[in-house]
Image 1 (cartoon, one colour):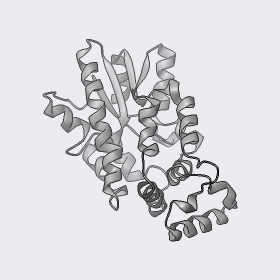
Image 2 (image 1 turned 120 degrees about the horizontal axis):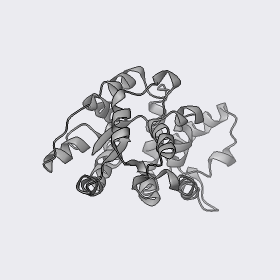
Image 3 (image 1 turned 45 degrees about the vertical axis):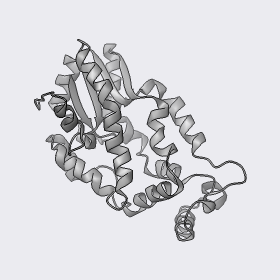
Image 4 (image 1 turned 30 degrees about the horizontal axis):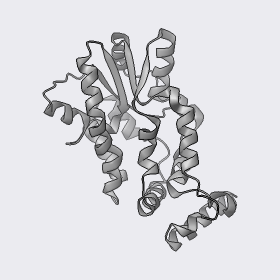
Length: 246
């Protein structure tokens, strides 16, 4: 099995991908991402539906008044009326505000490999069902949801992958990548644990099955999931597997 770390959105200048990706793709008969691209449309609709408050409820009832005042000022600057943003839960505002441009998303590792898989008729599947993939957001309580949005504003100076992040990704420096991802959640580490550690644990049984299947899989997940004591590499090594970095 090949295990690759992804950056979910890239620029044209970030291509070509490191040669190891082409090697792993060509050597594999099946490709696996965090979520199944075939379920993408349904997944997005379900996430949007879950992120809108029911009639009679609104954002101001679920966040600190100071947070709401800040959000109100922010959207006033971009000419979004209160009646529009007040319908959304904080985590959905986070999703909408942090989404990369369509062009950069299309240049992400998964999108690129997905197109190649379609061209070569290689099956593509996901480690998570749409419900499982959306659960990180949908299952947040009010405090966690508010914290996630505040983390976005705290990190607002960052516009997409930084040069240092891309450099670490290209050289396969999984520990630096994990540390960068953790730093985003340093003020609310339980969110980082849910985003990274819990999902890594949930993926283990499927990855174990791929390794034992007799077929060659190329599993591609966010690069921040690889390193650290609770990263996929450490968890799989604890199960007796050995790795060689290409």
